[in-house]
Length: 387
Image 1: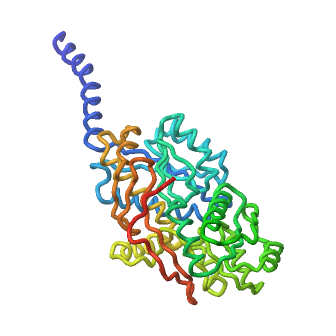
Image 2: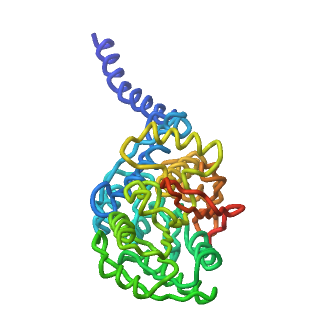
Image 3: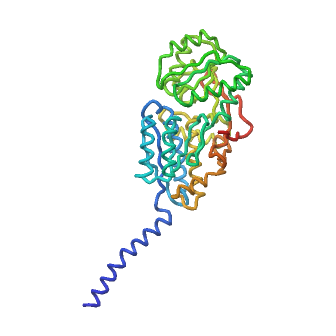
């Protein structure tokens, strides 16, 4: 009887150890998912743009998981909607890091939101992969910047417009960091290139009445209306501009294929756009991507530079997770980004190891009578970032 009792007690002691051992072995073999935060606004004034960023990121992560994940481990996404409010973005980022224990965060759209999250990821030694084009006045070892910056976009665009369209610019944008800095830089490019600024206006996020601005544009008689309007303001401006009968060419850093659908072909034809990606980029990988996007998302969005920014962010993060010895170790993942190269639908792109920004193509397109973007300029190779 004593022998049987001892044997039972021994089993009772050993069983928890055996189960603990099994649990550790399972984690090491790849059952435990890698947690990644997605921090986007699917509500509020920036939701039009952020829905596209979200779709692109989610598509990339779903593709990574479908092809075996990260060395056999799936990526588990934890979504947080910050409702287009930078203060909420900071709070949501903190919760993703401290409560959800994410390895990295992909997201935010506006520079205001990114700047609110920056001290949070720096304080907690976390990582933000920022997918959007921005004004380029920043560097952080805790942020990887995947969107284009002025030396890859605005500087080339302004000089191209001066050479091919006209010299007199009217600058307009929503009243936040990105348009203000971009227009400050545009004035520097124009001064060097022999152009002039005949007007400059900023409107609050979400503004849809441009009657007073249109009168100022008419009076100043520019050759080019240089725009960084976003969201609903962008759509309203194009439509009212066309109805008002103004003839100066609209040149935008922020319009894309999804926005053009809302604007309509009549109001957008003849305008120019400069970004790193258009859905009409000609390569086999992009043809497959455009088809896959159309099959996956039937929400009215189109493949655009915003979608591609989110997609590239997800793909770059996936490659960094694979490269890191421990994909749960954020510091190792940050180091793994340095020098990463990616074969993307937008072309062969990479992360500059000296500043955590992406080397990207510059492309200029003109909207035709059918509302489609015809690519009329493309850089011969990716342009090194100079933040």
